[in-house]
Every structure is written in C-alpha cells, then in structure tokens.
Image (cartoon, rainbow, N blue to C red):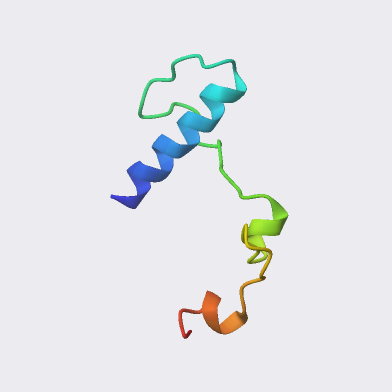
Length: 60
C-alpha cells in the first residue's frame, strides 16, 4: 500500500532529523510531509540530464 510506504518514508526522515529516535507507526502527527529537493521535484536526476515533460508524463 503506497500510503503506508509513504508513512514509513516520512517516519524514517523525521527520525533521522531528530537524532535517530524511534517513531511509532501510525504517525500521530498527520501534518508531517516529505518533499524532494527542488532539483528532483523539477525532474533532475544524478546524471545531470533533466527529465522531459514526455518522460514525466510516462510517454517516453
């Protein structure tokens, strides 16, 4: 289930930000979020080649 996977990823990030403290699931604070850095959000990858609109839409 993608919702649960996202919740685990959010918990891992916030645990690391707090010095690797354990967080229990399901998360009590439902306002926590996870966003990529702007470069990744806009389609960039480690190769340095930006993603085209067609690739982002799954048409590539």
